[in-house]
Every structure is written in C-alpha cells, then in structure tokens.
Image (tube, rainbow, N blue to C red):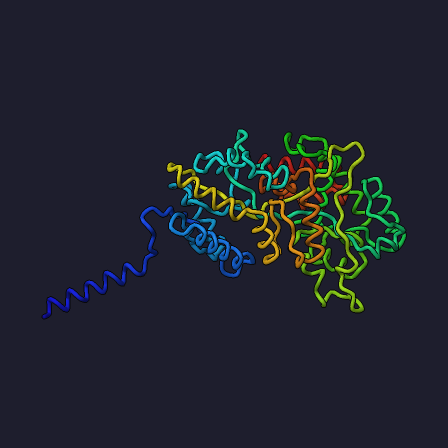
Length: 421
C-alpha cells in the first residue's frame, strides 16, 4: 500500500512538473525573444497582442516565446554577456548603448539582405539601413525611431510678419531678425546639461549643409565648421541666459508663448495637448504646425531627416533554414506597416517603417509621421553618429563657442580632441 501511494505521489509530481513547462508540438519551431517591450513600456500591450496573434496564426508550426525583461539596464547587461560569451538570442532588442557596428560585424546575426531585397525593404524609410550595414549587408534592423523636425507656433510666426515657415536658412535668419524686432525668441537654445536643443539644431544644420553622406569623412567635413558658425548666430535670437539653460528652460519658453520654433523628439508631442498648457482654453496644439528642415544655400541637403534609433531588432544567425525562415516571418509580421500603425497609435512611438497613421493619432503626430515618410533619406543626429565622447564634450564646446573662447574651427577641434583621447 505504501509503495502504491509513493508511486502515485511520484506520478503527481512528474505530471505537475511537466505542466509547469510550455508544451510544444514535436515539429514546432520555437523562437526565443527576450524583450524590454513589456511591463510598463508604452509598447507592451500592443506587442503582447502581436505576438499572441502571430502565434495563433502559426499554431503548431511556429511559437514565439517572450522572455520578459522589465529592467532596461539589467537587460542590456544580460544581452551583452549572452552575445559575448555565447550566441545571440533568436531575436533581441538593441539600442544605441550597444556598439551596433561591432555586433553587425560579429557574424552572430542573420544576413537579412536577401529578404529585404525581395520587397520587404520597401516598407522601411529611405536610408534607414545606411549607417548600420556592413559590406552592403543588413543584419540588424533599425525599428523604433525618433525624428527631429521643427514645430512652430503659427500665431507667433504671423506676429513676426511671416505667413510660411522659412524654406531656406537665409530666410530663417531673416525670420530670426523679424522675431527679435517683434520682441520674440526665434527658437530655444541651451548649452547647459547635455545641450540637447543646441545639439539638435546643430544636427539639422549639419544635414542641410553636408547632406546624406556628411558623416563619411567624420568631423573633417567642412560642413561641421560652417554649421558651428550658423549655430553661434542662432544664439543671438534665443532667450537670455541660454548658455547656462536646460531643457526645462527651452520647454518653458515655448509653453509661455514667447518662442516661435520648438525642436525636440516626438515623445514631447503629448504636451501640446495637455489642458495645463492651454492658454484661455486654447490648446498649444491648436496653434502649432510641423515644418521640415530648411535648405542651406550651397548645401548638399535635400529633403533629408535627422533621426535617432530607439530600438533595433536583431535576429541571430541560424543553422537551420526552416528556423531562419520562421524568424524572418516573425520579423516581417511585427514590421508590417499595418501592425506598426497599431504600435504607433498605442504607444506614441515612431518607427523606421513607412506606415499610415491611424485617424485616432494626434494631428501633430500624424504630420510628423508624414514628414518622416516623405524624407528622401535619414541621418543620425550628431550624438548618435559619433562616440560617446562627442556628446560628453558637446556642451562645453557650445559654451566655448558662444562665449567667444573658440571660433567655429576651435569648436570642431574640441570635439575631435575629445573623440581622439
């Protein structure tokens, strides 16, 4: 009797343990997907639904298993260790804190080029792969993006005597003079903290002057000196104290309606719709319009867009052709324009995929997406294009430039020296 009871208890334990592990069909391909787009991440709910729907559509043949990682830094550390000491997960998420080029060159990630050339690549914004391809091959997909394009207050612009946003930087600096005459700040600048606003304006100038391939020669391209000259000129038309200002100052001046043009990432768009930022019951969004980067006389820029990458999708190299096909199928599913539109609506995020925004998306977000979709090419902002030492030195270099401690060439030399150390 005791042996019978013991046997029954053993069977219960065995079946209990079996029930605690996922059950897969014998011929089902399992894709491991450690993900930070879970928990409180803005994309969590929609990504979970996409994975659920993909698994349902491919039941019995492919199953994506999400390994939830709610701590971003712990996730980064784990992925680095996993890839460095072994092989990459079937699919993982990377951001620009990783050395993307080194990862792409490691041989541990799948060559997606043949699949992109079959038509899949047409779903992505033009130039999206340029900065990340190695020997013409794409193994890591830029996916979540942030784009940087000017947004301006139409009422304030009219007070400056303008009925359109300047199309060229010659026009822009004339507008700046008109704004100053009207008692307004043309735009916000800041050299305090990380000099974020000035870094973005500098990036737009670099793109307009140097064009698509401006980073090919590093900081030796003359566009960087000319852009520094223009950035310094801009400081004559911003608010007082900009040399020590922070992002809070730039934001505050635009919210106070004394600054005409605002430049920041798409994550700030929600603030245009907040009742707390309304004046006399009028939302800030109702007075705002989206512009494109002006062209620069003699410059090489042509309808380009300054961006950064918030998240890459990185698929591991596979020995099994069937599993490779399954991974590609999953990537194509979540980068499908219709699915990306759902992600954008639910999260407010932007992507390197060309998609039609949902009618329920805020008007400003729709217009920013339209600018992104119509861009002839994209380039990274300067902080994303150069090593971390560049962004660390940038605030001091801007301060030195504005305080006449260095000229435009000296500004660029400070950045070069920081990178070379």
